[in-house]
Length: 307
Length: 259
Ligand SMILES: Nc1ncnc2c1ncn2[C@@H]1O[C@H](COP(=O)(O)OP(=O)(O)OP(=O)(O)O)[C@@H](O)[C@H]1O
Ligand SMILES: [Mg+2]
Image 1 (tube, rainbow over the protein chains, first blue to last red):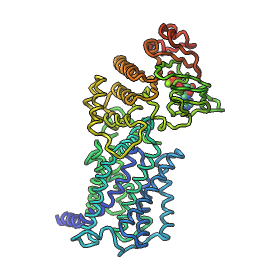
Image 2: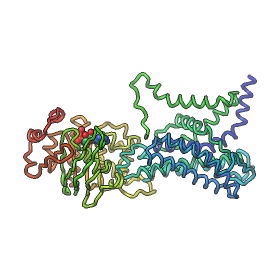
Image 3: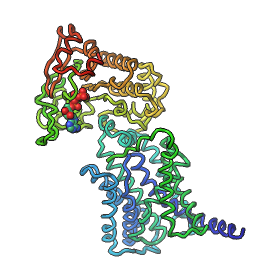
Image 4: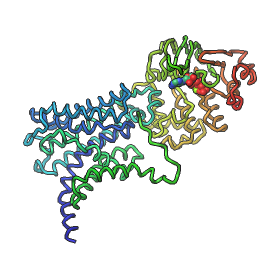
């Protein structure tokens, strides 16, 4: 009984910190979901765009820029990275996953070059989390408020955007590129814009993380992709993806639930080194579920993705 | 007005399996003309339609729509002039989007897109009205995702989408071939109604000789990538199935079955 009690109290003590963390990381989950679900473009750029955002943010902060400006700079860099991946896919007809791997690999060197070293501390510079009234800076509350409000704003904006004429057109490119093109929609513009936007969100996540933890590290992206995917799967399992509203809410809900689950596992004594195996198995299970469910029926059509 | 001037397209040029899809094909289709395109499998009918829509870039030759040279325009730039219904019902609609959203995409075809709300009340009402003309109950399923519709319903929707804003040119590639006879009939009736109502300049590919006899102002027969025969005017009015089939060098089973 005693151990259960310690596990639970350890877990509860970490809930606010984990919540702050998960809200910050929900942007990278959004950056994974957008190309994957809206454009049918499975994209791996986020693992490189996340540290890119972090590095650009750290450099801006070190150069004296205010927190919000550092985030905007990170977003611009992330957008560029995402649109490069899309361009590589469109222009050279390279598979989306391969294009993402290429971009992610090259971004590692770029990040190192940008910072000049593998680690840059920006501890003590003013951040976007400072301005919250009644919350002592540096505490999870201010991070929860700022990241949460930012997430809510992004959610509402995307919800509006994907219902506009342009947003509908972008979704059509993901749903049926040939049909979209025949309706006069430029596949290039929609793909570059959409994947770029996703890169911008991944970079935002990295930038917020740097402001939250006070340093940037070129290795901070490692594992973010699989975590993000797992979070997305959980989110979609909870809120579903039948409507636009649900599909857009899935990354946020998923991120919040997933990181609490991870925290619970760690509190229960799971060695942190096993985390990747557990996450990988979980994502595999979620992806395999539809085929297992229909094991007795006819084989479902393989999910088609753009090549 | 559509003009194709000695269009040429060769696949796998210089390789042992070289295929000449379009062999200096020329064709003129006056405005308001409804032409039926026939020809045996591999004659180049789909290639011709792909070349017109921009999905296939020509090796040489020219394509003009209403006098404008569109030869080097990509598909999405030609979309404001050309609308198309494919043989495969899956191809002409966005499956994971709703009926209303698909109608919206069709309405916006070739227009400048903005940041205003796509589906507003006015548009929804007009879609309901247009779809009710089909008598398939689609007007009550505006919020249904298209993947949940039957092939015939999807094809009917594609047709309504293609004809909704009166394109300069309508391309139909065996658009009833994948449907059961009754649904094929419904879609064909809707096609004729739309084409006649708006006087659309239309190219319709079919293997159904009855359709070739019953509909259209002219019949164009393709063979090995060129026009082999054009039947127009009074001659078209008198044409019969045996006469048409007689023009095929090689009578495929499919054609005999279809007629
Ligand atoms: N993408 C392609 N790659 C290689 N060859 C092609 C391609 N598309 C068409 N062809 C060739 O071009 C020729 C004409 O094909 P097309 O599809 O235009 O015929 P069709 O008249 O539409 O026939 P069907 O009645 O069977 O639909 C054929 O020999 C075909 O093999
Ligand atoms: Mg064909």
